[in-house]
Length: 225
Image (cartoon, rainbow, N blue to C red):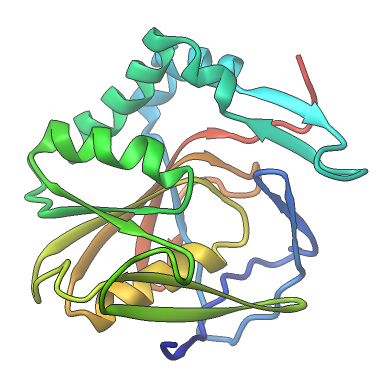
């Protein structure tokens, strides 16, 4: 196992969040911890594609347990045009940034990451849960409220100095993204940005996670329209 991630993201007034349907524990950050999320730029906020993306995400109340409002992206995936719009917005942002690799976090980062990677001419690196990858791996363990979790990638998947984009479907407290950043940086990568389809409403304007920008397309919803 790798070194424990010490960068669990924090925000003032953050108590409990919901990370894509799973309750996210309250986190206590060190004074030097910082979370910054970059919302879609002002000109993109008027983009009708963003409203279509938000509308295509289904809110499932009380799943997987009481009190959780699950933001379900499978309904977006059933609409090819909207799915393409989401990928296209990411591609429009990252094409021309000299990204060498896109790292997708298990499991929903595997949905958007490969499509973005192919479109911008980058390789795709899966960041997986323990014991899912054959061969030699490098690991990063991170803290949860009642234990730990871990991300792994193959040794040699990234070369020192390569520019990397990290992709996941949702950011809540940022603990998983933070672990992914640590994992990549330990392998010598230059993490350019993190990209998420959904962010909690509290993530507005400009924030950073371990000094790395987080780009979010739409806010999560707490109710069904």
